[in-house]
Image (cartoon, rainbow, N blue to C red; front, side, top):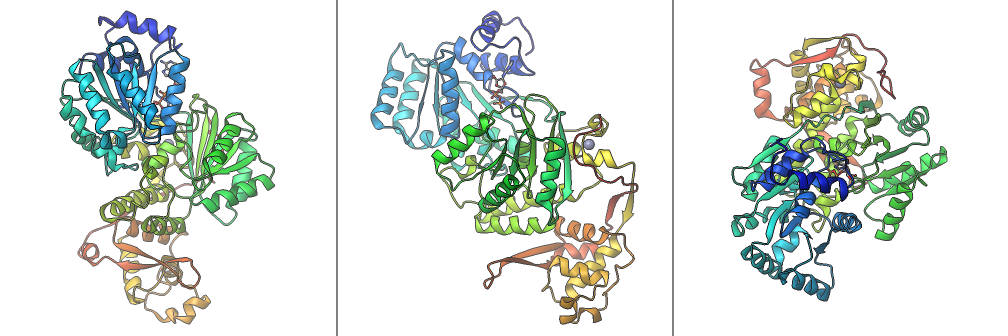
Length: 562
Ligand code: ADP
Ligand code: ZN
């Protein structure tokens, strides 16, 4: 597909320069365009900022007929249309919250043999609900004017993805109704299972897949233990590494956003908050101030970031645990789109896992606009909750890992092999670790499980660890846990080792965190329970081997030493 000898090559190159102002193609752009223009169904995995829009906008311009683009958010669509009109490419969109007369006018224009539009954008809901639209598409199809169907953010089709949108699942109807129109599915995030789902649900035929490495070599990753001084740490980090530069701090709750922003303002940063309960005008105002560099730090929920095209974001900080590795990767991906070195710092504490888990089960967590759009509270139902919890546990496991390359861990999640030597010490683990040792921790694991049972499966993980280390604090004494057989059995272990093992047992489902809201105080508490079925293997001879760094330099924040 790389060939430059397709009948349309000259025209493509000329328009790429003249209309879009690009001097060349980016990786895979030419290949994708050639494949889709040859009439094949194509699936494209390209990282954020890779240049997906061009792969359908350029063909739309040089092919006869109209390109239908399904895009998840009206705000994204409006942004795209503004850019297209600026480049003199006639484009329109249809959405449910548009005036009926306006919709009628667009539909009428589509009906004309001399329709001026090259691209028509719609939301997936529109495809699902509007017979008028389907009739119009039918008429275009019969007149051979439906040039191409583009599914943007195609991972929304899949329940396994982090942005599942039920209306995307109905898009399979397009291929059934218009079998001769090539489909182009685009996404910046997809694991192997998501990809399978998308291809199946959309009914893509002999689909050609393009994917490129999702490694972002200019981003420097680190995970730092979150303490009570977290906000001071963040202030220090920004001051030392990115003062007066632009960044995003992702927070879990709306209240966190406001608290973090206020504190950073006190520390003298130009910070503001952004979340879903602000009204649209407020949000637009903050976004604008940020684009114009009047504010340089945004403390936001994941509601912020979709379609944000600021190229010089120098840091992305996670103040709390992200919901999934995909989400983490995408949020980090908003840093350094200009290719310059940028930092991604995650402040991790195990207790945040319990908080996020609780919020997921309540459906009270703020979603990215993709998921949240038109469908609140889907997160706490059966299978979706299960998937969400699994995704969250993978994220815990990522954070608990202080040995393997952060790039390797992320890319493995996307089914991509990565040689950690290529990281060149641009992640915390590669930077600090000289070597690691493998240690058989089966005995510790068994003892911890036993301790959970001996104390009646009524206590939190931190309490279990206290007892295991031999603490005599008041709470231990109150429950007379100093008299329990395994009290102090883990005294001799290196600092942090018991908690590593305990958290591993949770991640691997030997132990389960049972999260509850405390009715009296409204706080969240969690107790550990034993998963008997899994634990049977452990006592039946299964070994647990964990890797620990054998020589650790003090973890360093900030820019990589390259
Ligand atoms: P994606 O949708 O993959 O995140 P976009 O399509 O929004 O990426 O493109 C990201 C940026 O890259 C845009 O500003 C776009 O103008 C620019 N861009 C795309 N293709 C090229 C190219 N071939 N040469 C230079 N800039 C490009
Ligand atoms: Zn690394």
